[in-house]
Length: 420
Image (tube, rainbow, N blue to C red; front, top):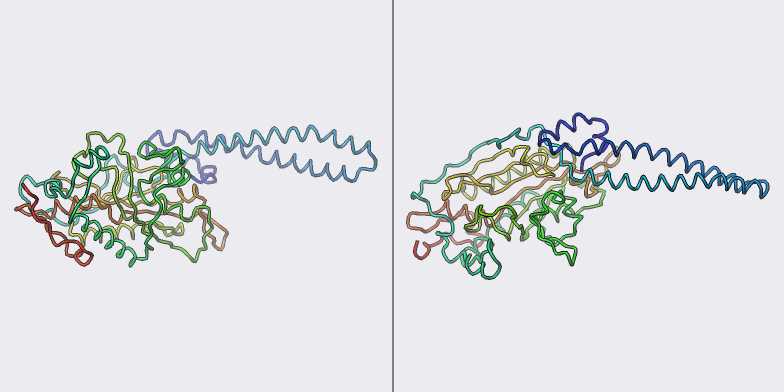
């Protein structure tokens, strides 16, 4: 949620920032300004009338006789009626103002890519020399990724992951949690069913409702990322400045409907409805969020480097930012079967946007103010397995796996799948 004070004091600057996202992003700003102005007109009028009521009450209590008392009471009936009328209007204006503010996205950081294309920040690593055409992850995994039986059970975009790939997944998760813990992120296993206010607070509602699984009978939703639960960990709290930064690494299954993705990445486990992920999340002072963003990106790059994956970092174009992000980096791994880079991790600085919606503040020398929140993927397990299989493939169909995972239970290699 945007800062009303900033909108009030710098309307042209806010409008210009929103228009970087596209004309539609700034479309509701005038309505917000109009409603805020009406609200600010109503408040002093109501306060003045209530002060008048208080003075009248004092006169009534001190009235010399019953006639004087009745006269004061009669005079105040009109004031009371006017206060009631204005209170009702104020409630309507506040409701309309909240509704107008809700869809406005965060103001993009000046350094977010101007677009229309993402900006490549750097390439790291060299794509491996592989057979042409390169095998894809389903061919390499064989029966270890069973889409057919999963489709009979649950429909498309689900998989049974089996055998050595299960051990690889668990090794990836444990290794990522150990690595992020060493960087100051406390491991957390959060709930994956949340109430609507948590999704609203993180900006996924009303922005991405078409991607969210809902359980209407229970008024709960399945999360698409543990960012939702981690952001809400301190909802409604005032944190002591000395306790920041607070950093968490959440491990959870994630669920996405992938509405609108028909015909896109339908083969294999790159884009599925259920997957596991380790997500980093930080609460920091406002002035520290740009540095924290770079810190999270550096951890993501360190993870990809130790997994021996060729990748590139891109600064996401403002027109492709989610509603809560002021700036976002993606790390895209090379996918040999596709001959291109694909998103593997991302990290976003959401500044004070989520904190305002969730009511999370920090106490400092000058009072309280919203914290800044950031999130970043440590490991998106399914996509990481795809990248490891395809980049580690050998001519005979076997797959070499990163040595760094051996101590966490991963196999050193996968034998060639039958028929490969």
